[in-house]
Length: 81
Image (cartoon, rainbow, N blue to C red; front, side):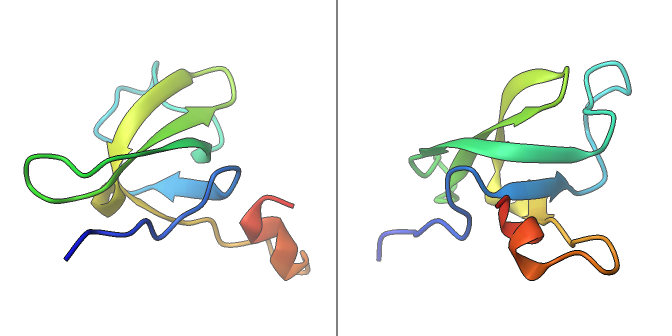
């Protein structure tokens, strides 16, 4: 079975406990998915994500989660709209 991506391009996600130094991490902890990548040698799909001022990096699906909108924000905010 071919792995499928849980997140879409332009969707906003949050990194789980960051494995990146504070210098490299996005200030907000929120990243935008910029590209869907193929599955790796472990069979897990990957993504290219970009954070404000932190550049772009590759992450595995297990390292990210859907961004939860702020209280009172519309549900579309979590999808990056």
